[in-house]
Length: 346
Image (cartoon, rainbow, N blue to C red; front, side):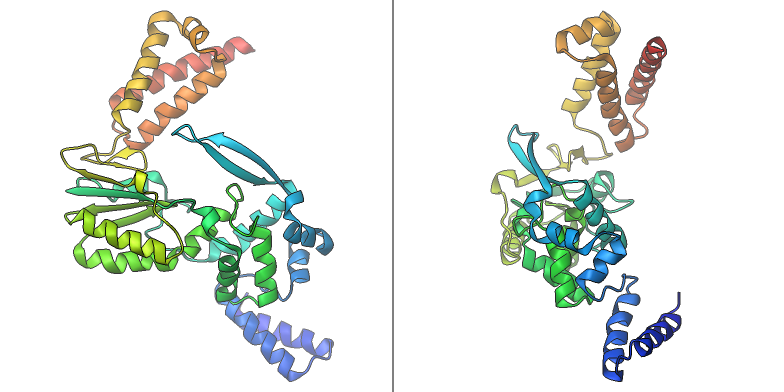
């Protein structure tokens, strides 16, 4: 639809409801700002509920009594510590998915942000840092919980939504007044929140020919530069943005050591770390030598779950390096075993 068509429809509706010229002009100005950004025109919280297709009272309860619409659980992180997850229940998740699909995914984010965006990911993030003199990786501590409700309100206001609408949408996306780890809207909102940060880092790094990417809370720098000066600058900038650096996770790696970006070795060609390759090699070896059932009896796994998990690890290695002949052979071996198992099950 062209703006002229929508403009005429708005004017006609205003006349039907006997709205004055001042009201009509204000509504047209409000609507045009959203329309040119390909964002849905939402005039009030009740209008949002109507667009989503749910009763407004029910959506209000989701926004302002969110404790009834989340389930809390923990999962183990790679370091053995617990990660706290607040997952929205189905109806709230439906609302958040609507916000993500209809609003957030139409908002541009930095090209240097590599997480939670279609056609970007860990491989794209790592590819940018191959074969560099020095690699620096830093981690932002408590990333999602550090992005608060008011910052989310500001995002929607900046897009052009009214204060009432912005406040309502922000409450639907937040829990305990911050971004919840587990909501479908949190990742994209975090990228929007970090747009100015990404720009400031690029303004600093580009003149020094430093390569920069950010994968969620993981900051990566590479090139030929003084890493300690860069770390000092980034730490200060992160602090000014209201975050803090997890100093224990800061790494500096030169070419004579393993350079790793978001779990991918980037010294020359991209590859999963040796430890992962060794583990895959070992598991395939045991299956070949002792048979699948004998191997599974030692690790207390069911056949299909184990094979699918192993195949997933092999596929990830193949995805990172499609020319990896060893992983290709393992893929074909495990795929054949999995097909045989499924045929036996019928």
